Image (cartoon, rainbow, N blue to C red):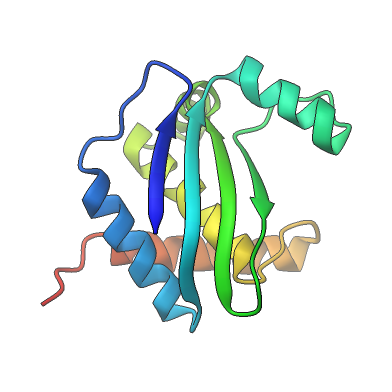
Length: 140
């Protein structure tokens, strides 16, 4: 089950549409949807998590905690709405497109994709773009 939680003045409209899309992304990677929690927050909230759990004193758009078991995906995905807004401006894309990229980024990490090396980052970007396109696909 995919759930959405809010620690910031932001509400994701059409939660069921996003949950359905992310579920289809998971299936497209031959994984099983477990319990995924998206927590939307601000920079300060995510910075504290980054310091406490990762020993990083930097702003970031996403931190994901992976509790997956085998092919069944479980985890908590924390997303800074402030950082997503800033990145959307920097990358000159719509806020919702950047939000989709960040949301699917967390799932792709759970599917085994990495982004620390240049070649891994390139594959991650390709996968993000591929999966974002699935958002618009009408299913029967």
